[in-house]
Length: 395
Image 1 (tube, rainbow, N blue to C red):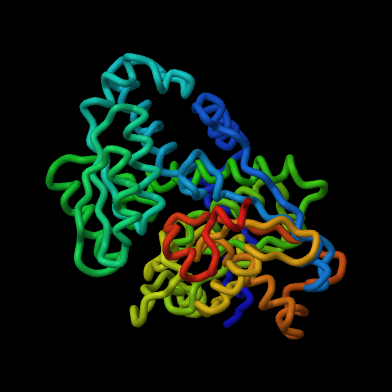
Image 2: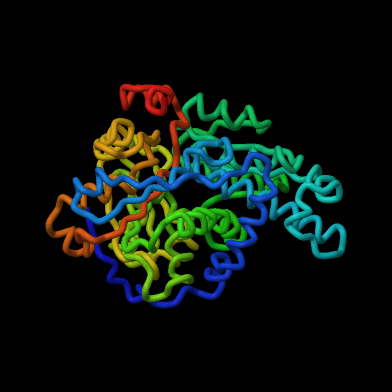
């Protein structure tokens, strides 16, 4: 399914409170923090000239977040950053003075962090990031995982020192349970989705994602004309589109949000003209995008900065995993998880549909930017779907 954004808010300025978290200054603070992280390197940006020629566009560049900070996902940027910033805020109150991000690993900050318990719900990747942030700062961490989270993904979180709590139901059920218990016990919820009365911390999570845009713009020879980004609750899509909007205004790239057809809460919200909860039916293979209710911050931003919304079928997500593993002539092999290549899958779908191609303004000179949001975070499932192990793809 495909819809252009015809909401009254479309192409209007971001609300001040939303713009603040995505400014160039905020993005610089994220990069300052990353420079202080052991093992930090900019993730690579790959050109796909073979696929670009096949799809009839000028260039395709894909940012490979499967190599981010040892966690294999773009979410390594969000949850951990939010935990660090929350510890810094707590330290400021305790010490009675401003605390710079460069002090995040100092003894006074770590002393404050030892008294904190952070928690969240996760499909897998966000929880790993929150757990890593807690481990780095010395805080206690409790992660809630729903029935659909694989044992392998839960074990990866536990290895970072987090306590795992299983919740019956889907992601939204785990979000509700996590928030309820955290409130009862005085824990700090570090969610990547927002709801009425809870927006500040999800804003910090989204702020962390701006590093992807900062790096990509330095790495690309030209600003893209089109950007396709996948969405669960909408955080990564809103962070990218909102930051590009602040940087370029009405000259920003044409932005398309992509979701699984079985969990399209943003697409359904666009049709309704307001945030709505999508109906839960069958699960989707795009497990990291299986969310049924949008983040309120993300929705406000995307209502203004997203130009089109698309949904994809599970088979299309798996097909692009295989295409990236065994690419067209001249293109590098890339390990993309079941949610990782969804933006590229949307481009492939749209480029082959004459109506969608026209509505998106795709031409032989279009410059496309997409993000591989995750690598093989569940290696066994990856091999089942692709027919190759991650090691076989990259060797």
